[in-house]
Image (tube, rainbow, N blue to C red; front, side, top):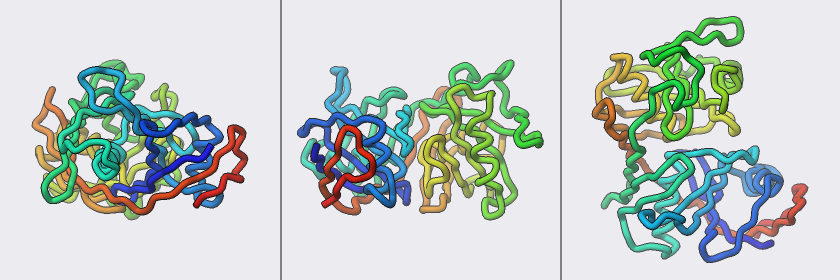
Length: 287
C-alpha cells in the first residue's frame, strides 16, 4: 500500500497527517508504529487520519494514533494541524469547521493571521468522567507516586490529564515521574502528566509527558488542562499564556461549564509518499 502523507507540527508536537478521504487507507498497529518511527519510518508523535464525517452535523472526522499504535480521543495541536491540512489540500474552503473526534465534537476557526483557534469544549472535572479513581470531586488530589505523595489536579479535555505544580519545569523530574503517573492505577485509561510552573496569574510554563508517546515539545490538551486545573485551584486567571518547550499557546476559560479556547500555530513541514505492507517490519520506503 502506497500512501500520500504530510508531515506537520504544532509547536514541535509533530504529526504524520494522512488523507483518508481521497485515498484508501487501512492501517494496522505495526504500520502506525512504523510511520511514527524516527529511524525507520517518517517519525512523529502521532498519526492523524482525516476522514469523512459520520454525523450530518460534522464537516470532517479525524482519528489520532500515538506512536505505540494506541488510539486516543483528542489532540489540541493535532486538530489545529488538521484544519490547516484540510484547507491547504483543497478539501474545504471554509475557515470555520466542526470536527468529529473520539472525544467528541470540536470547533476550529482559522484566524486572519494564520493562527488557529479551537473550541476544545468544557472540561470534565468529575472523577468518573476523566476517568480517575477518587472518592469525590476536589480542586486537587493526593497521589502516591514512586514513594512520594504528590498533589495533582485531574481534568479531562476529551482525554485524561493529571497536572502537577512544580517550582521549575527545567528541573522537574519529568522522565522519572511521567511514566509512573501515566500508568498509575488511579487512572484506568492511563493519563497524560503535566508539570506546571506558575509564573504569574496569566502565565505558566509547562512540560507534558503524553501517554503512549512520552514527553513531547507541546501538548494542546495538556495546556488546556493545566489552565483549568490552575484556575480551579485559584492560581490562574481566565486568559493564560502557556509556554511549552516548542512555543506558546494562549488558553481562555471563563469557568465552570464554559468551553476552553486554545489559539496557536500549525505548520506544514513536507509532503511525501510511503510504501507500507500489512506486516510491516520497518522496511517501508519513503519518497
